[in-house]
Image 1 (cartoon, helix red, strand yellow):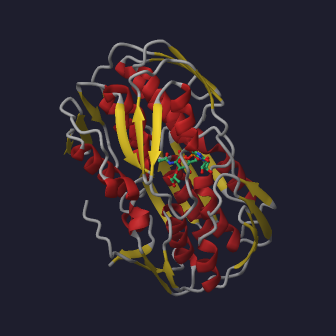
Image 2 (cartoon, rainbow, N blue to C red):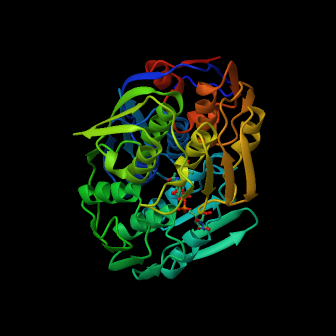
Length: 422
Ligand code: EPZ
């Protein structure tokens, strides 16, 4: 990991993309799986663990708790058998929203945990009320004091939980917690995202008894203990989607290898309707974009299998450079249009109707500019804008992008883009 806080990207636009890539392992599958490793007293091996900042920060949190964590080539070994401390480091909690996934595993194993209210991020205030309500339904005592929250699960009992929002994180926390909680726990209105299914598959491989992963109703029957295993999480469908959209924006032809192409069906449908030629054979998706594309009138983000909120910013950039008008409805987060201000510097024509709706009128060209990444997916989208803009674009704060993309500049350079990290 040789990322540095002050890194920038320098991009010279105008190059078509051409090449092939194997897609990295999913950040949003790996992070909850790293937490779930603590449910076992054995060492666990996560195969092809992505080399990204969020994983690095999660490793720091696990080590501060007393877990032994080390990389062996591309794999990550986590041994939580010696964990003693159950207070998650204040600063790491603030900077790392994913620390919230540790609630489920640490509470299950140690019966108590003290965390600080996890930092929101720029895309929204990211409350954890649904997590807290769900734990309370299972008899966990929760005391909120200033910025700290104390959880005590010594009197917890299996039961039924109805999530008012199909929260990915809350579903993942309860699945972890219930996997070694005596009795039957049922989650209604559970999240169906592929990353939730992957966590369940990981736990089942460790010996958990979980039924219904990927549906709105998940049933978990607690088992005595879970054994150490080797596990390869799914590939990153958001990185896959980002590179497909990059090619739709720049033109050219790319071939991407991933075993879960079916998990971005909605995006593939949209890109085809816009005029991209797409072919899927075995685990390879080929996307070619030669001529001009036409806009899609309306796209709304939603819970899986709807169009994913994490690809919304990239589609917004694509909509800026295709002929016609596009309305984007962001139905998951309340502040996920941060890139609009940056794109307007490049000449994009975007109207923010309200915090959940924008209307974009495509323009012929974008002009290079000095930009600031303000969040992970928005930052990656500004890179895509730089790839097609006339001139040389500089993007600051690329550490946001490094949170989820494994050396994004290397991926794009291998596909023919002109991008450097300085
Ligand atoms: C996960 O976040 C992902 N992160 C997000 O990816 C993704 O955008 C999101 O799911 C939706 O798919 C990881 O998996 C690490 P939620 P999570 O709980 O679990 C509200 C990325 O770029 N909510 O499903 O935090 C919440 O504010 C990141 O990789 C509550 O109100 O998402 C949001 O509006 C960004 N109370 C909605 O629910 C709660 O207690 C969905 O959130 C929890 C959530």
